[in-house]
Length: 167
Image (cartoon, rainbow, N blue to C red; front, top):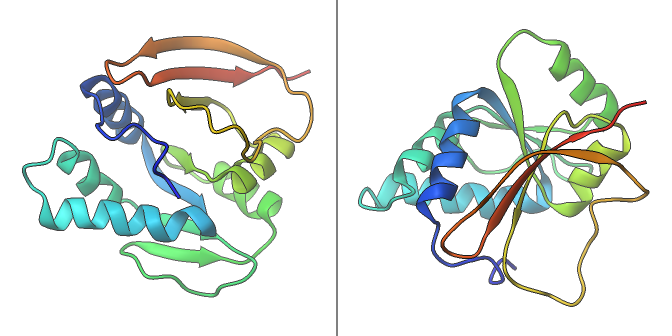
């Protein structure tokens, strides 16, 4: 369920997303997020050329995606493969390969595993102006970050970029 997100993507958000995607060549996601997220962006890329999100959607669709799952062996989606192996080993191996950055799209359970194993180099949090009351935390334990930058959007979303403090 994603109805809590701001319905209109702001120009600043799109520019930030484009900047992030220009520096990457791989997308990784958890299974729960992947099905809905992939379906949405493929629809925008294929059927909505007038959308302000269209150019980003095309990049998303064309980029290789790895979906981590312990329960499914395959998922629908272009340029998508499922990884059933150990998260720590698989992502560590990916990070050691030549290429551009790896971008992660949650959800909470998947991202919390990456944070737990200290596999995140930068954390870009898109904070929507909605209080849910309950939800899943991405932090299983205390973690300290340095704020690199922050920008607010006209739709109320605030984008914060952090780097983890490593000891």
